[in-house]
Image 1 (cartoon, rainbow, N blue to C red):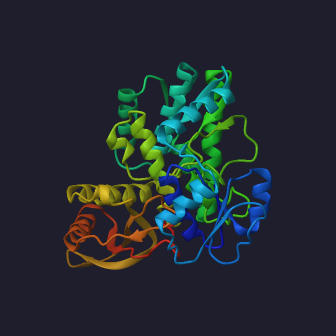
Image 2 (image 1 turned 90 degrees about the horizontal axis):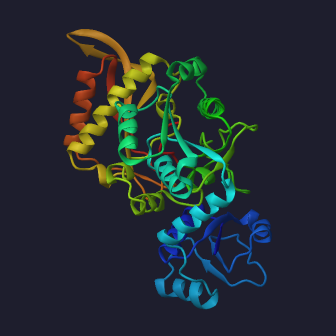
Image 3 (image 1 turned 180 degrees about the vertical axis):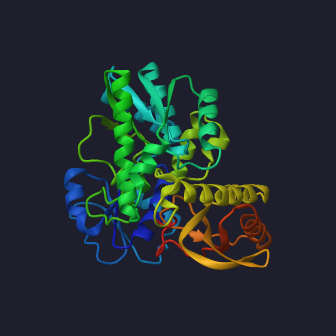
Length: 403
């Protein structure tokens, strides 16, 4: 099934409903519909919003901007008019993905980019299920992870997986590469390229490695403009941030999945719930939660503030209700008072959102007492911070991350 859209938000909501009925579907902007159908035939088209021309010879369901399609009408279109089958299930996806990985890599050796997030962990688990000892996981500590995360990643991996793990300390290398860089797109591209170079170096040390596993998901693809006709929201380091020339061929078994579908696959593969339900964390790490230049001092300020945000969210029992909750270090300073004296310190913004897959999000209505505790602790425990603010912006028009 193909959902062609003039309105992206409506199309994504429809995609969730179609996939919930166990029918696979993809999104295509109206201007790219003809080319997509020529390259990849579909059983039918759902036209989401005004300005989508109906393709000849295919069943079409038109949906107005309010998106009010009765469930019975949607099912009748999918199963009666288009003849779709209920084949989009977690078990079927895992079986198909394993077969695709085996067909792609054969007997070749593979390295997996393990970051500690749910996407890379599920991708690694899926590939390990497919090829076993052909896989070596590489964890690069770029110095931009959350507090305690490097240790947690290594411990969780060794407890859960039996594949080989290589840990690379590249903290200073990444900081040096980011020195003086303030543009967020440049940060992402620098980090994306350096990631690949580090993996290529490790692959050369291992010898005869041709493939690199990445936890790329459908949201990354859409926002990076990697699909024809989609605009670029931001270059995810694993899509738009990749270098043009690479020595390794990519293996991306989760590329067609939304975030909640990735979690379902992770649970089906037996991954622990604390890993599967971990809040999403950007590949470039804290570098894109620091507005402006990335320095060791600013990373440490943000790391401590972010740890407080997450601790208080968890203590309040709100972690599962939120898609993400984190701190951002702004590129401005404000006047404050400590011990009766004037200070001129950093501004920390707290960001908490609710969402399904991250393409749209609402700011979370956190209880005032939780916000008060977060602010009080950051101002008391994190040196150099003089002000804490709360971000109440929805996506769109804002993004979840500040950069």
